[in-house]
Length: 488
Image (cartoon, rainbow, N blue to C red; front, side, top):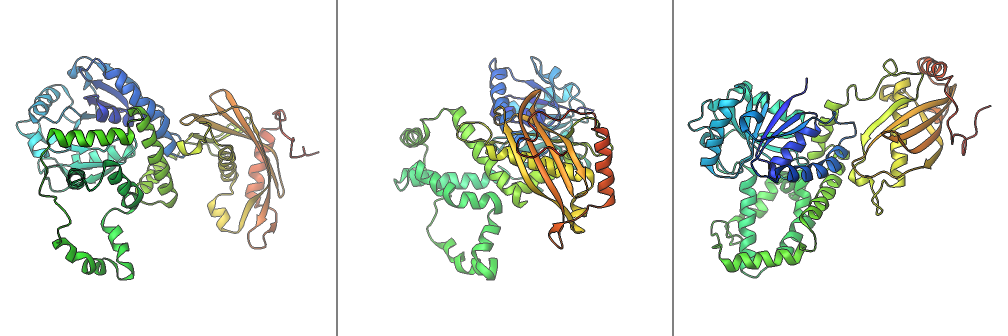
């Protein structure tokens, strides 16, 4: 059954929430009095559709239905989750909660995107305080996994667990902040760095660009995969954190920071920072900067995914939730037709300087389809661990049409020969009904002990015979045999 999320406030953060829910199969109902809300959310969705699906190596659920509502009470009807992302004014938020709770389901979770207010402040005077919780995201909401989940003792444990489960189901990493504090956890760090950066600019020590370079060329990348304490533990060498603390602890008494001495936000300081920032990145529009940001984030997180570390581990966990049933098994597939062996979106890091999928990535996609076909016939990881596998002897790829980031591609596989040691498959890659490429592969079954060709197991032989019989009526594919000889 499709779940419904109501988004109250459709700015940058609200639009990101809408995209995250929508692209994970939820229906989304938006309320925002801004006459430009539909356009703004549409632009956020364009970016999200291009970047988010490519984080997954399995297909996301079918996109949910998006609707815009002039009445807040109408927007929250039937919603499982209500996300409030209105401006940071406590009086406004309390007024919104009053209207929400008069109209929404009492079992719906009301999450607030607030970056500063404590949940106890938001629950003050509420009809059902136990329904309201802080769920503070980070921009872009549709890509970054962190959500600070901040409850109070008025929120039942069952409700907190349900919130965690729902957030996890759409690919978030809910960090349960067990004791409320102004600005939660992450923004307190950001605020400290921000204050120090303001002083460095004001005192003429560094420009905005130099400060950004110091972050993105060094500790920013380290923090992306190890955080703060683990980074410092590594910095301590073999002796670990204790050595690091002993070595650098005295620095805490040195005048290295003005964190508690905040510069006055004068017009001169604002102009100085704004001018430097314009000089640094003003050649790009905001939409261009968003795409640059998304390209970098996807590349970093996919790299972390390959290591199953940090945010990458969260992505792998999300894929594991999506994977069951995403592709057919031997018994589920219509064996009389080419079998679906790959279904995914083209990620940003698969594209080249021409803006379309790099030719090497076609081979990567076809290799993944071959791996899936091997699993279908029984040559899975358990079988490989027992000492047998297929090695590719020859490939041939035809590039027929170009494809861009965010496109949804399917690969369907026809078995041309599956007998004894030999496996010959023909893959066809589609975007919808458009044929993009074909890939032909000839493989030999090999003993991993001797590294020489050997017969596969009787179970694999039987699976191949079953597919061969079912596909016997299929025509020999156009383009097959151009580099691999058609079996006589």
